[in-house]
Image (tube, rainbow, N blue to C red):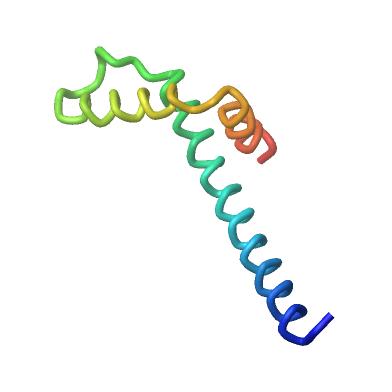
Length: 78
């Protein structure tokens, strides 16, 4: 293996670690949002935030089942 290949492999490994850490943080955000949406009483919200709450609920509902499960697991392990 050449020095260039070794450096490239190292850089790729570092980038992968960064992406995995970011995925973990995003899963926690999605899990918290899903939990929030689950207990949210839409009618009790002020009109000023109703649109944002609806957008949040739609975004959570658009997640794949696997991603949503991973997201919920990520907040339960804390």
